[in-house]
Length: 534
Image (cartoon, rainbow, N blue to C red; front, side, top):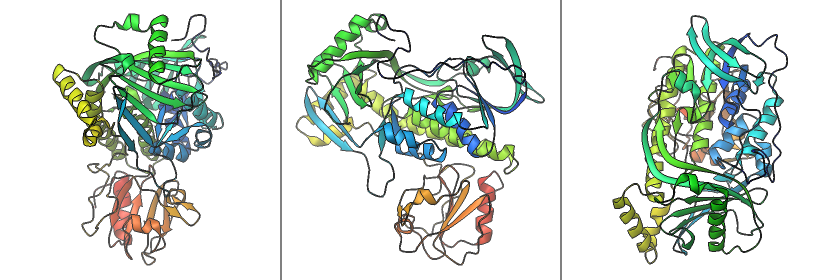
């Protein structure tokens, strides 16, 4: 929502580009390898990840421009690695505000300061703040340079049907209604997914009672880029307030509504202005500010039972909805997009067996359930669901005023990449290792002579080894990197003379061996693309 007198996309700091529906109509009914429904961050990431693998796609969206408002603003280190792999990270580094620190306050007194893991060996900071408009704009810039991606704006998918030859989509735009066929469909159409409804599927899980108003304000304020959580502040007695700094002097303020506040009255402009003014007074800001945009949300942990429905795959919020606490929603969705893209591309071009696609749901739904386990703890602390939880939360906060250990309960448990330990395409760990990342884990970063370990990874699978006698030759599908035995990378991987580590296109480890051989490596590579377990 915008202040009275301003249009939906009349922003104080961002120019929304208008996108027309396709003018040329001659090829609209042609066949697509992949149709992606939803041109938000997740859908655009999927299109770019497919293009990186040489697979064309058609990106469809019912809107005429980007999503309005800041929405998802916290982008994790692991997501920056994804953005790098799809060739879109440069403008994010120029614009986003990196941060490592969070502070929590109870009744005005600081009870916790936490620092997310960071070190000189990391290429990216643990977290970055950047508004969703910029996220979509920068991804769109990359898409506009990519000939393998066709984008159709103002194109609403109104029907979907399984056919022998693929998936038939009915599409309505301002000019006409037409039908096209796709071999595969990625549903990235958000929390209110129409495709999910058309397929007769529904999300299952928990709904939390807590409601929050999101308000973006523009102001000059010298507080650093530190996530702040205010519990029971003077401005919102009994509630919680979150504050994040964003680029262009935009400050994101999330404040909890009380049980006796109706959502309808809470989102009226005068009430939003009054509430924001009270928060800013609590923060000690008495200078001018302007209201930019606001919305309302509640915390939920909801997911599909299966992220695949035949030739349709659900990614991002169409597959799962997670609480914002711990900033996991967007980051989880970007990982979905990359995960299905590298697998689908290999099946489409014949480099992998169809069984590879069966690993998408176990891996990404497993990641969602892990998010639920952590986010639920944060959600119960931020918005206690019952009177009992409220009493325990308030007791912990009171203790934190004089006992530092209790303040740690207010830590939002920031996101780390999920380990695909139970994936059907990840091998059991070699018992010969003592330390280092296990199979299924994300490859840790390390400094190399000319940059970082991640810089050396190939476009597909990569074999990292300190052993020069393995006799494994690199191919167009496998890059072989020999690490210096005394390097930081070899130390972090717990490498030895005959050890090796097989890294997937998404940066996760498929297998590792203390004593590798060419046969075991090639068998593991086959298993990682859907073959039988060696």
